[in-house]
Length: 62
Image (cartoon, rainbow, N blue to C red; front, side):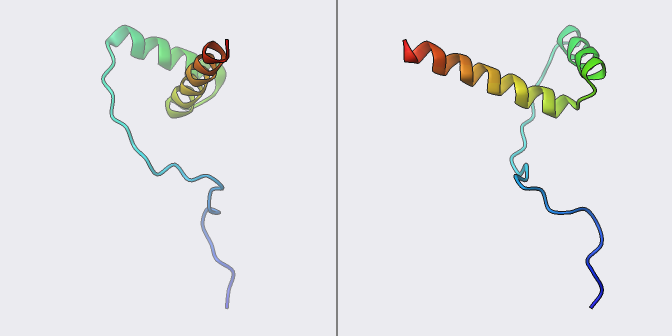
């Protein structure tokens, strides 16, 4: 048998999808941020969610 071709399986596949609505200004700020950081909009949103959850955990620890 020949080895498999294509992309390797992700360690943590992203199977859940969300659809959100943004105003033009927020979308532009997100696009600018992503270009500056060299990341995708999805990655920026995931990082934002992680920050919010970490902030909430800090607040509930007090």
